Each structure stands twice: as C-alpha cells, then as structure tokens.
Length: 153
Image (cartoon, rainbow, N blue to C red; front, side, top):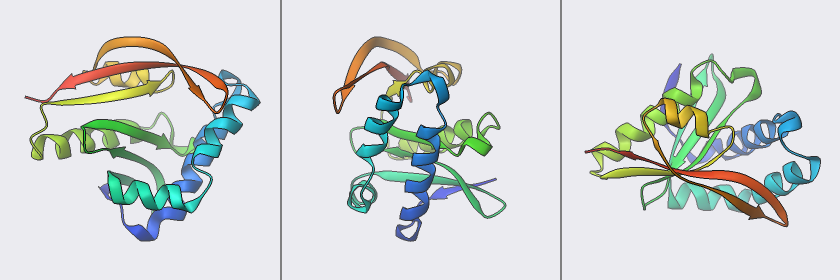
C-alpha cells in the first residue's frame, strides 16, 4: 500500500470513494441520512476547496485509490473515507498514521477529530481520547458523533 499527499488530478477519485463509503454504511444510517451526507460532497467545487484548504492524504493498493484522509489548518482530522472493498484491511489506520506523522512534522500539539460512529472505535484504538459524544445535524438529518483528541507532543 502506498500512502502519499493527494494531487489535484485525484479529485474525481476522492469524490467517488467518498460516495461509495457513505453509501456502503448500510443499515447504520437511514437513506435520508446517507443522502444528506453524500450531498455535502456532491460538487467538484467542494473537493477543489478541500485540496486548497487542507492537507489530504491518499492510499493506493494496486494502483486503485482505496481511501483518503484530510487535516485542516487547526489540526483537525476532518475526513477519513475508505472504499468499501478495502475496509477493515488497515487502510484507515495507515491513513491516520500518515496524518499523525504530518501533524507532528508541522509541530501541532494535538490532533482533534469530529468522528462518526464508524470512525470513533478506530480512533480510540489508535490512541485518541474521547472528549464528548454529541448529536450533529447535517441538512436536516441527525447523526451521532464524537469529539476525540490525541496529544502529539
């Protein structure tokens, strides 16, 4: 597996992995929740802006984009999505470690995450501490999320 900084030419592939990952959540979310979630990243302008504002890492296996993660300038792990065919194969862990390494190199004291119910257990296993569980609203749909943090120094 190769994990590296994303390039502008990968925008469509990022969007595709995002949509497939959200739609692959199955019965954990209602169809309305999945539709609201997917609509956030519907346009390419969202992905172009993400690439301008954040550090984005991508993971490849056999030349296929299998996941990505991003960190904003405040030191927040803002996105982590893994293609359904590659879930539970270490892709998420490798991407998070890449983001942790980048944040450490950039001298961030902490890495914070606003995580879904899918991401929370992985982050806890990777040394993040639970700060708060809460309900988040996205386009009229309610989601159970958690704020987690990991010290880097």
